[in-house]
Length: 203
Image (cartoon, rainbow, N blue to C red):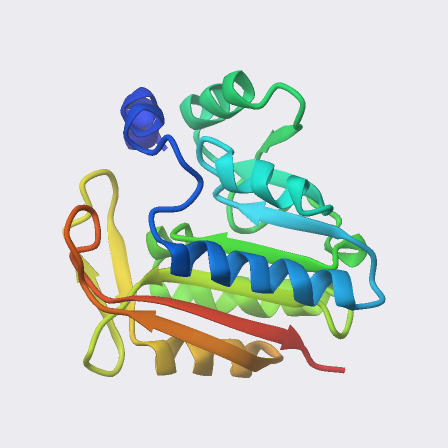
């Protein structure tokens, strides 16, 4: 993750808040509510936690968070900003994480950097290790056309997913969609539509 290592300080300077829109926070808060309402405990995994702001927000809602990122530079920023939290080096495979003890997985704008075929394999692997009723929230840049499209991310290769396509990938992996949001492009960093899709591990 050399690109994110080099950009870590820039990200910390630009993204000083956990969320860039009320909708983003509402989606994450709804995910947290699903987890707290369940019977699997309150531990969740933040995949691609970046500078750690969302992990800290989740802790403030009462959850226990395992926060992981493959970039040493981003982890250094996260530990500096949130020394009270624990951050671990790992990627979307979550090889170091015991998913059997997790009640949910959050992946916001992190699976966009995983090649599409690999995303499907990652979701299937998560489903095989998570308990039934575990909750997953995915977010990323979207398309208006069905399928997946590469785009010119400033840091690393990335792909945009149509909401139906990512929902189908979740369904194929063993999850049932609970809800979704789609926002339209806006000024600043929101060049494309963006989706949040929340789903539950089927029994």
